[in-house]
Length: 203
Figure 1 (tube, rainbow, N blue to C red):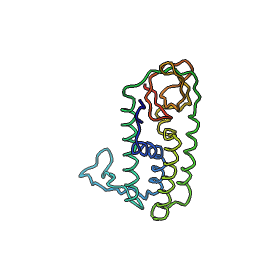
Figure 2 (figure 1 turned 90 degrees about the vertical axis):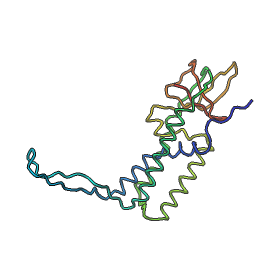
Figure 3 (figure 1 turned 180 degrees about the vertical axis):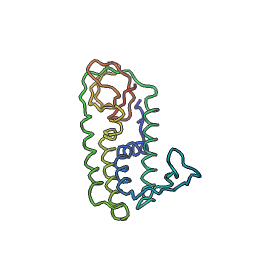
């Protein structure tokens, strides 16, 4: 019987977006204008201070867009956390026979980050639409090519990606594995199949 894919479309999109949360953070920083402060006058000097200044708000050029970027980033990170926490239930025992790291491919994420350092204006609808189309194409390609887990957030959390040959119930198979530890030949591990091409190693 064919196993069901552990990842569906919406979690896959959320995992893809989570990899670009640093890009969203860069865009938010570039849109920052100032911090508004309020002065509280003390009735008497305390340690040489007659007043206290405290922040009351942060001002951005495009506050609605910034809020949207923040919400999208936060939801995608929560979805990533949920997937990693729940996806490895009922794992299967396998033995790794060959393993080759693909973790260096995370450098591919640096290309879209260049967007934040060119003349990109969050106030322009054309720029926002162009970004959405660009990210949509990248998301589609990542899902179709089974590379959504080539993700700098996962790399920062200690996960690596490996091309693996393994044996399961005496049969040799091949799969791309996401693993929280280094994989080498003869490792006996537990994994969960995500789809026909990818799996994740249980901690």
